[in-house]
Length: 344
Image (cartoon, rainbow, N blue to C red; front, side, top):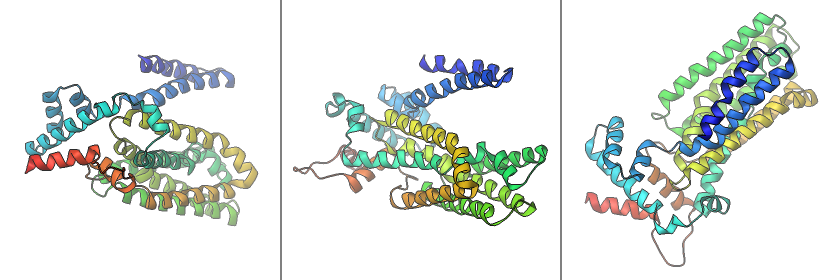
Protein backbone atom coordinates (compact mmCIF):
# COMPACT_ATOMS: atom_id res chain seq x y z
CA UNK A 1 0.00 0.00 0.00
CA UNK A 2 2.84 2.40 0.88
CA UNK A 3 4.45 1.75 -2.50
CA UNK A 4 1.11 2.37 -4.20
CA UNK A 5 0.78 5.74 -2.49
CA UNK A 6 4.36 6.60 -3.41
CA UNK A 7 3.97 5.50 -7.04
CA UNK A 8 0.95 7.75 -7.47
CA UNK A 9 3.28 10.74 -7.29
CA UNK A 10 5.23 9.62 -10.38
CA UNK A 11 2.56 10.45 -13.02
CA UNK A 12 1.53 13.58 -11.10
CA UNK A 13 5.14 14.77 -10.97
CA UNK A 14 5.76 13.81 -14.61
CA UNK A 15 2.68 15.66 -15.87
CA UNK A 16 3.55 18.70 -13.76
CA UNK A 17 7.10 18.82 -15.17
CA UNK A 18 5.91 18.26 -18.76
CA UNK A 19 3.45 21.17 -18.75
CA UNK A 20 5.28 23.43 -16.29
CA UNK A 21 4.80 27.10 -17.28
CA UNK A 22 7.66 28.24 -15.06
CA UNK A 23 10.80 27.04 -13.34
CA UNK A 24 9.04 27.08 -9.96
CA UNK A 25 6.30 24.72 -11.17
CA UNK A 26 8.97 22.50 -12.75
CA UNK A 27 10.66 22.17 -9.33
CA UNK A 28 7.31 21.31 -7.71
CA UNK A 29 6.87 18.49 -10.22
CA UNK A 30 10.41 17.34 -9.54
CA UNK A 31 9.65 17.30 -5.81
CA UNK A 32 6.53 15.19 -6.32
CA UNK A 33 8.45 12.67 -8.41
CA UNK A 34 11.19 12.67 -5.79
CA UNK A 35 8.70 11.68 -3.09
CA UNK A 36 8.07 8.42 -4.96
CA UNK A 37 11.80 7.78 -5.15
CA UNK A 38 11.99 8.23 -1.39
CA UNK A 39 9.19 5.72 -0.86
CA UNK A 40 10.80 3.28 -3.25
CA UNK A 41 14.25 3.55 -1.72
CA UNK A 42 12.99 2.96 1.81
CA UNK A 43 10.23 0.40 1.21
CA UNK A 44 10.90 -1.58 -1.97
CA UNK A 45 14.08 -3.35 -0.78
CA UNK A 46 12.09 -4.82 2.10
CA UNK A 47 10.17 -6.87 -0.47
CA UNK A 48 13.19 -7.81 -2.59
CA UNK A 49 13.84 -11.17 -0.98
CA UNK A 50 14.52 -14.02 -3.36
CA UNK A 51 11.24 -15.63 -4.35
CA UNK A 52 12.13 -19.19 -3.38
CA UNK A 53 13.39 -18.08 0.05
CA UNK A 54 10.14 -16.25 0.70
CA UNK A 55 7.83 -19.08 -0.25
CA UNK A 56 9.98 -21.56 1.66
CA UNK A 57 9.49 -19.47 4.77
CA UNK A 58 5.75 -19.72 4.17
CA UNK A 59 6.00 -23.54 4.01
CA UNK A 60 4.98 -23.56 0.33
CA UNK A 61 7.63 -26.12 -0.47
CA UNK A 62 6.13 -27.41 -3.72
CA UNK A 63 5.93 -23.91 -5.14
CA UNK A 64 9.50 -23.20 -4.04
CA UNK A 65 10.64 -26.37 -5.81
CA UNK A 66 8.95 -25.23 -9.04
CA UNK A 67 10.64 -21.83 -8.85
CA UNK A 68 14.05 -23.45 -8.36
CA UNK A 69 13.45 -25.84 -11.27
CA UNK A 70 12.95 -22.85 -13.56
CA UNK A 71 16.55 -21.78 -12.92
CA UNK A 72 18.14 -25.21 -12.52
CA UNK A 73 17.20 -28.38 -14.38
CA UNK A 74 19.20 -30.68 -12.09
CA UNK A 75 16.54 -32.10 -9.74
CA UNK A 76 19.10 -33.47 -7.27
CA UNK A 77 20.77 -30.09 -6.92
CA UNK A 78 17.37 -28.44 -6.56
CA UNK A 79 16.45 -30.77 -3.69
CA UNK A 80 19.77 -30.07 -1.96
CA UNK A 81 19.28 -26.33 -2.40
CA UNK A 82 15.73 -26.55 -1.09
CA UNK A 83 16.95 -28.45 1.97
CA UNK A 84 19.54 -25.73 2.59
CA UNK A 85 16.93 -23.00 2.37
CA UNK A 86 14.52 -24.81 4.70
CA UNK A 87 17.29 -25.37 7.22
CA UNK A 88 18.42 -21.74 7.01
CA UNK A 89 14.83 -20.57 7.36
CA UNK A 90 14.38 -22.70 10.47
CA UNK A 91 17.48 -21.09 12.00
CA UNK A 92 16.29 -17.60 11.05
CA UNK A 93 12.93 -18.26 12.74
CA UNK A 94 14.36 -20.05 15.77
CA UNK A 95 14.08 -18.82 19.35
CA UNK A 96 17.64 -17.50 19.05
CA UNK A 97 16.42 -14.72 16.70
CA UNK A 98 12.69 -14.60 17.46
CA UNK A 99 12.90 -11.90 20.12
CA UNK A 100 15.98 -10.15 18.75
CA UNK A 101 15.08 -6.75 17.22
CA UNK A 102 16.55 -6.50 13.72
CA UNK A 103 17.37 -2.80 13.91
CA UNK A 104 19.17 -3.26 17.22
CA UNK A 105 21.25 -5.99 15.63
CA UNK A 106 22.07 -3.68 12.73
CA UNK A 107 22.98 -0.78 15.02
CA UNK A 108 25.08 -2.97 17.33
CA UNK A 109 26.19 -5.73 14.97
CA UNK A 110 28.39 -8.71 15.85
CA UNK A 111 31.75 -8.80 14.00
CA UNK A 112 30.61 -10.83 10.98
CA UNK A 113 27.51 -8.69 10.40
CA UNK A 114 29.58 -5.53 10.96
CA UNK A 115 31.84 -6.48 8.06
CA UNK A 116 28.83 -7.32 5.91
CA UNK A 117 27.50 -3.81 6.58
CA UNK A 118 30.89 -2.25 5.88
CA UNK A 119 31.04 -4.14 2.59
CA UNK A 120 27.45 -3.46 1.51
CA UNK A 121 27.17 0.17 2.58
CA UNK A 122 30.74 0.91 1.51
CA UNK A 123 30.28 -0.30 -2.05
CA UNK A 124 26.97 1.58 -2.29
CA UNK A 125 28.62 4.83 -1.19
CA UNK A 126 31.66 4.40 -3.44
CA UNK A 127 29.33 3.83 -6.38
CA UNK A 128 28.09 7.40 -6.03
CA UNK A 129 30.90 9.45 -4.45
CA UNK A 130 33.15 8.57 -7.37
CA UNK A 131 31.02 11.08 -9.27
CA UNK A 132 29.10 9.02 -11.80
CA UNK A 133 25.78 10.85 -11.42
CA UNK A 134 27.47 14.25 -11.58
CA UNK A 135 29.30 13.18 -14.74
CA UNK A 136 26.06 12.04 -16.38
CA UNK A 137 23.77 14.82 -15.12
CA UNK A 138 26.19 17.61 -15.99
CA UNK A 139 27.73 16.17 -19.14
CA UNK A 140 26.32 19.10 -21.23
CA UNK A 141 28.11 21.58 -18.94
CA UNK A 142 31.29 19.48 -19.12
CA UNK A 143 31.20 19.43 -22.92
CA UNK A 144 30.50 23.16 -23.08
CA UNK A 145 33.47 23.79 -20.77
CA UNK A 146 35.57 21.73 -23.17
CA UNK A 147 34.62 24.07 -26.01
CA UNK A 148 31.46 22.76 -27.69
CA UNK A 149 29.25 25.76 -28.49
CA UNK A 150 26.64 24.25 -30.81
CA UNK A 151 23.70 22.97 -28.74
CA UNK A 152 22.99 20.17 -31.21
CA UNK A 153 26.57 18.92 -30.87
CA UNK A 154 26.28 19.05 -27.08
CA UNK A 155 23.11 16.97 -27.36
CA UNK A 156 24.84 14.48 -29.67
CA UNK A 157 27.74 14.08 -27.24
CA UNK A 158 25.29 13.58 -24.36
CA UNK A 159 23.44 10.91 -26.35
CA UNK A 160 26.78 9.15 -26.90
CA UNK A 161 27.22 9.00 -23.12
CA UNK A 162 23.80 7.38 -22.74
CA UNK A 163 24.55 4.84 -25.46
CA UNK A 164 27.86 3.90 -23.83
CA UNK A 165 26.12 3.40 -20.49
CA UNK A 166 23.41 1.18 -21.96
CA UNK A 167 25.72 -0.98 -24.08
CA UNK A 168 28.13 -1.74 -21.26
CA UNK A 169 25.35 -2.60 -18.82
CA UNK A 170 24.32 -5.31 -21.29
CA UNK A 171 27.91 -6.54 -21.34
CA UNK A 172 27.93 -6.68 -17.53
CA UNK A 173 24.77 -8.81 -17.55
CA UNK A 174 26.56 -11.36 -19.73
CA UNK A 175 29.81 -11.35 -17.74
CA UNK A 176 28.68 -11.15 -14.12
CA UNK A 177 28.16 -14.89 -13.63
CA UNK A 178 30.99 -15.92 -15.94
CA UNK A 179 33.80 -13.67 -14.74
CA UNK A 180 32.62 -13.02 -11.19
CA UNK A 181 31.72 -9.96 -9.14
CA UNK A 182 35.14 -8.94 -7.86
CA UNK A 183 37.03 -8.99 -11.20
CA UNK A 184 34.34 -6.76 -12.71
CA UNK A 185 34.53 -4.39 -9.75
CA UNK A 186 38.32 -4.20 -9.95
CA UNK A 187 38.28 -3.59 -13.70
CA UNK A 188 35.53 -1.01 -13.28
CA UNK A 189 37.17 1.01 -10.52
CA UNK A 190 40.61 0.98 -12.17
CA UNK A 191 39.12 2.10 -15.49
CA UNK A 192 37.08 4.85 -13.83
CA UNK A 193 40.10 6.10 -11.90
CA UNK A 194 42.17 6.38 -15.08
CA UNK A 195 39.39 8.09 -17.06
CA UNK A 196 38.65 10.59 -14.28
CA UNK A 197 42.34 11.42 -13.85
CA UNK A 198 42.80 11.91 -17.60
CA UNK A 199 39.68 14.07 -17.68
CA UNK A 200 41.19 16.30 -15.00
CA UNK A 201 44.50 16.43 -16.87
CA UNK A 202 42.64 17.29 -20.08
CA UNK A 203 41.07 20.38 -18.50
CA UNK A 204 44.24 21.33 -16.61
CA UNK A 205 46.75 21.09 -19.47
CA UNK A 206 44.90 22.20 -22.60
CA UNK A 207 42.87 25.18 -23.71
CA UNK A 208 39.44 24.89 -25.29
CA UNK A 209 39.58 23.37 -28.74
CA UNK A 210 38.96 20.29 -30.87
CA UNK A 211 41.52 18.20 -28.94
CA UNK A 212 39.97 18.99 -25.56
CA UNK A 213 36.48 18.35 -26.95
CA UNK A 214 37.42 14.97 -28.40
CA UNK A 215 39.23 13.86 -25.26
CA UNK A 216 36.39 15.08 -23.02
CA UNK A 217 33.84 13.00 -24.95
CA UNK A 218 36.18 9.99 -24.95
CA UNK A 219 36.93 10.12 -21.22
CA UNK A 220 33.34 10.81 -20.12
CA UNK A 221 32.10 7.90 -22.25
CA UNK A 222 34.96 5.76 -20.94
CA UNK A 223 34.14 6.59 -17.33
CA UNK A 224 30.46 5.76 -17.86
CA UNK A 225 31.35 2.54 -19.71
CA UNK A 226 33.66 1.29 -16.95
CA UNK A 227 31.03 2.19 -14.36
CA UNK A 228 28.32 0.29 -16.24
CA UNK A 229 30.39 -2.85 -16.66
CA UNK A 230 31.14 -3.19 -12.96
CA UNK A 231 30.45 -0.76 -10.14
CA UNK A 232 26.99 0.16 -11.42
CA UNK A 233 25.19 -3.21 -11.62
CA UNK A 234 27.49 -5.38 -9.49
CA UNK A 235 27.00 -3.12 -6.48
CA UNK A 236 23.30 -4.04 -6.30
CA UNK A 237 23.92 -7.74 -6.91
CA UNK A 238 26.53 -7.86 -4.14
CA UNK A 239 24.30 -6.05 -1.66
CA UNK A 240 21.48 -8.51 -2.28
CA UNK A 241 23.77 -11.50 -1.64
CA UNK A 242 25.87 -10.79 1.43
CA UNK A 243 23.33 -10.20 4.21
CA UNK A 244 21.77 -13.00 6.31
CA UNK A 245 18.13 -13.77 5.66
CA UNK A 246 16.95 -12.38 9.00
CA UNK A 247 18.31 -8.85 8.30
CA UNK A 248 18.53 -8.79 4.50
CA UNK A 249 15.48 -6.61 3.87
CA UNK A 250 16.45 -3.89 6.34
CA UNK A 251 20.17 -3.99 5.47
CA UNK A 252 19.41 -3.77 1.74
CA UNK A 253 17.15 -0.79 2.42
CA UNK A 254 19.97 0.90 4.34
CA UNK A 255 22.28 0.33 1.39
CA UNK A 256 19.78 1.86 -1.02
CA UNK A 257 19.33 4.90 1.23
CA UNK A 258 23.11 5.38 1.52
CA UNK A 259 23.39 5.17 -2.27
CA UNK A 260 20.74 7.80 -2.96
CA UNK A 261 21.93 10.16 -0.22
CA UNK A 262 25.47 10.09 -1.64
CA UNK A 263 24.08 10.56 -5.15
CA UNK A 264 22.10 13.61 -4.07
CA UNK A 265 25.02 15.18 -2.22
CA UNK A 266 27.40 14.74 -5.15
CA UNK A 267 24.88 15.95 -7.74
CA UNK A 268 23.93 19.03 -5.72
CA UNK A 269 27.50 20.02 -4.91
CA UNK A 270 29.14 19.34 -8.30
CA UNK A 271 28.70 22.79 -9.85
CA UNK A 272 29.66 24.60 -6.63
CA UNK A 273 32.78 22.47 -6.19
CA UNK A 274 33.67 22.93 -9.87
CA UNK A 275 33.46 26.71 -9.51
CA UNK A 276 35.61 26.57 -6.38
CA UNK A 277 38.39 24.27 -7.60
CA UNK A 278 37.69 24.13 -11.39
CA UNK A 279 36.55 21.17 -13.48
CA UNK A 280 40.12 19.85 -13.47
CA UNK A 281 40.30 19.85 -9.67
CA UNK A 282 36.88 18.23 -9.37
CA UNK A 283 37.82 15.36 -11.67
CA UNK A 284 41.13 14.88 -9.86
CA UNK A 285 39.10 14.65 -6.62
CA UNK A 286 36.75 12.06 -8.13
CA UNK A 287 39.78 10.14 -9.41
CA UNK A 288 41.27 10.04 -5.90
CA UNK A 289 37.99 8.75 -4.47
CA UNK A 290 37.78 6.13 -7.21
CA UNK A 291 41.34 5.12 -6.31
CA UNK A 292 40.18 4.52 -2.74
CA UNK A 293 37.39 2.36 -4.17
CA UNK A 294 40.04 0.15 -5.80
CA UNK A 295 41.68 -0.40 -2.41
CA UNK A 296 38.28 -1.07 -0.82
CA UNK A 297 37.37 -3.70 -3.42
CA UNK A 298 40.79 -5.38 -3.24
CA UNK A 299 40.93 -5.59 0.54
CA UNK A 300 37.34 -5.92 1.76
CA UNK A 301 34.89 -7.03 -0.93
CA UNK A 302 34.65 -10.85 -1.20
CA UNK A 303 33.94 -12.91 -4.32
CA UNK A 304 30.41 -14.30 -4.14
CA UNK A 305 30.20 -15.94 -7.57
CA UNK A 306 28.91 -19.51 -7.39
CA UNK A 307 28.20 -19.35 -3.65
CA UNK A 308 24.79 -19.83 -2.08
CA UNK A 309 23.51 -17.20 0.33
CA UNK A 310 24.22 -19.56 3.22
CA UNK A 311 27.82 -20.17 2.06
CA UNK A 312 28.41 -16.42 1.82
CA UNK A 313 27.24 -15.98 5.40
CA UNK A 314 29.57 -18.76 6.53
CA UNK A 315 32.45 -17.09 4.67
CA UNK A 316 31.96 -13.89 6.68
CA UNK A 317 31.61 -15.93 9.88
CA UNK A 318 34.91 -17.71 9.22
CA UNK A 319 36.81 -14.53 8.34
CA UNK A 320 35.38 -12.06 10.82
CA UNK A 321 33.42 -14.04 13.44
CA UNK A 322 34.69 -14.23 17.00
CA UNK A 323 35.13 -17.37 19.07
CA UNK A 324 32.80 -17.79 22.00
CA UNK A 325 34.15 -18.98 25.35
CA UNK A 326 32.46 -22.30 24.75
CA UNK A 327 33.17 -23.81 21.37
CA UNK A 328 29.89 -23.81 19.48
CA UNK A 329 29.03 -24.18 15.81
CA UNK A 330 27.39 -21.19 14.14
CA UNK A 331 24.00 -21.63 12.52
CA UNK A 332 25.49 -21.71 9.05
CA UNK A 333 28.16 -24.23 10.05
CA UNK A 334 25.41 -26.44 11.46
CA UNK A 335 23.57 -26.06 8.17
CA UNK A 336 26.56 -27.18 6.13
CA UNK A 337 27.28 -30.03 8.55
CA UNK A 338 23.67 -31.22 8.31
CA UNK A 339 23.82 -31.07 4.53
CA UNK A 340 27.02 -33.14 4.52
CA UNK A 341 25.42 -35.75 6.74
CA UNK A 342 22.40 -35.91 4.44
CA UNK A 343 24.50 -36.36 1.29
CA UNK A 344 26.59 -39.06 2.96
